[in-house]
Structures are given as C-alpha cells and as structure tokens.
Length: 264
Image (cartoon, rainbow, N blue to C red; front, side, top):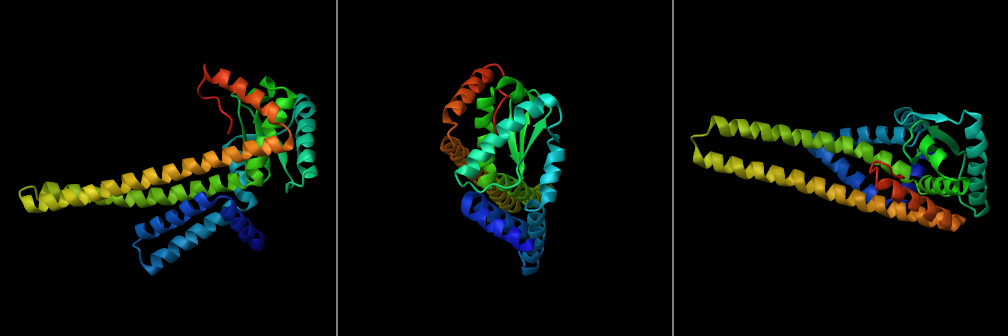
C-alpha cells in the first residue's frame, strides 16, 4: 500500500509540477516556522509525510465526501439517468485506453449547477445539474471531472489544502513576531533609533508575507487554469466537445443572474 501511494505521489509530481513546487515551498516555510534547524525540518517532514498518507489513501476521499455532503445514487430517477450516462463515458474512456479504475458516480443535494471530482474514485454531480442538463451534456460534464481524476488534479487540490495549513502556521508565527515588534516599539517609543530599526524589521516581515502570499496564489491560479484546459481537451478527446460547448453556454447564461454557479 505504501509503495502504491509513493508511486501515485511521483505521478502527481510529474503531472502537476506547479503544485509539487508549491508543496516543496510549503515544506520549507513550515520548517522555518519551527526554527529552521535540522530537527525542525525533520518534524515538518514527518508532519507532511503523514498528511500525504492521508491524501493518497481512501481516508482522505471519505473525509472529502463527508465535508462535501456527497451521497450515493439512490432514487430511481437518478439511477435511470445518471448510471447509463456515467457508464457510457467510462466505457468510451476505456475504449480509448484511458487508465481509469473503480470510479463511482454520486450526487450532491444542492440546486446549484455544479460537479466535482473527489480523491481518485468519486465523481459528484449536483441535483441542479441533473435537472438542467440533457443526458449528452451530462456526459461532457462527467468526462470533464473524470479528466481531473486521471491527471490527479484532485490529489493536487488535497495536497494544496495541506500546504495551506503549513503556510498558515508559518504566517501565524510571523504575525506573532509583528505583534512583539509593535509591543517593543510602544515600550521604547522614546528611542528614535530603536523605533526606526523596529519599523524596518516590521516592513521586512510585512513584505515577506505579502510577496509569499502573492506568489503562492499566482502559482496556484496558473496550475488550476492549466488543469482546467487539460480537462477540456480530454472531453474533446472522448468525443463530447460539442456537448461541452452547449453546457458551458447554458452556464454562461445562468451566471448572468447568479455568479455562484460554476463548474469545477
């Protein structure tokens, strides 16, 4: 099991280099927050390794299902509509030698028009999407989400969530340092020389936080956009390009009245 997860991680790193690079930066940030010593790097590595075990194991996917309130297909209407559509897309992917395994179609009880892929086995469609789209349009929607699983984009998002946790700790430490600096400045307000030095140190900390956040967000946005375009090409590869265009056109019209409606 450990060997398979390591193999999955290597594939993830190759297919999502931007996310992998950000993960490495997150690890360094966490280590610096813990003191930057060899022991700090070891502790951060252990924490990150354990987190990856969760991400690349079935547990991470189960937790996501609970958080996203995903359920299995239950009603006769859902079974009659979703199951055949889902199997047709999967069969087409297998016919084109796409490496998929043990995928499951699920439902989210929300009327927003949406769909998402979770972990390595779950495709979830909202009730709003089921009611709005035709079976052909649902095929394109499902194919798009299957692509995210095939290219391990879902794993990348989980990895990013863990990295964000490390960065949050890192910035928390820096915020505490800023608080200490402000306290010192108030106590030693009569010393102009010390006040000037404190201001410089504070400016350095603030710039570090701003630049780090900006670079990380920029890199993540590039990675996310790249993954979406790759998923769109996958849909065309399976032969559902026209259906995807129709679905996106419908969504664009909906967004004019509801900016919360999106496809992930």
